Amino acid sequence: MTEHAAPLPPRLRPARADDAPRLAQIVASAAAEQPAKPAFGADTPHPADALLTRILTELEVDVAIPADSPAPDRADAFVVRDGAHLEALYVAPEARGQGLGSALLSRLKAQHPRLTLWVLEANAAARRFYTRHGFYEEVHHAAPDAPGLSDIHMVWEARK
Image 1 (tube, one colour):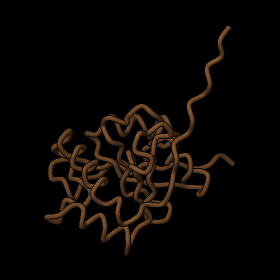
Image 2 (tube, helix red, strand yellow):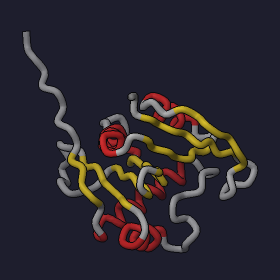
Image 3 (cartoon, rainbow, N blue to C red):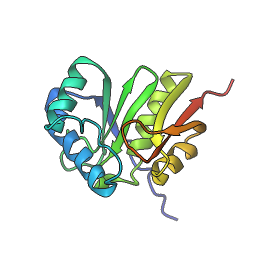
């Protein structure tokens, strides 16, 4: 009987300024898939500039790189957070299903006893992802940045 080796975990690291164009590409792909969803940094004409500015000045950003990536330093997923509040988690369409988002989330769960985020009610895939990772829906309300849509506040808490 042949044993299969477990896939290697992705490499996680803090984002750098030179990641901004790639992160902007990932955001643009997500925006194209869900036009109703306002893209992170969409309030500026240059998403890469918005990401770069926030990476360097306001928020914490970590990236995930598949272990078997032919481009060993190319981020295929990233999470943006302000302390224990997730502002955004994006995975490049071609990298989905490889555990990149799960790895980023697992790292945060190991660092914080409680995590929070807002997700659009219409974003069923994201809601399923977060529910699978132990988040529960706490509050629903009208989304201020997406007229006609509702936001859901989701929470994860470590078991005591």
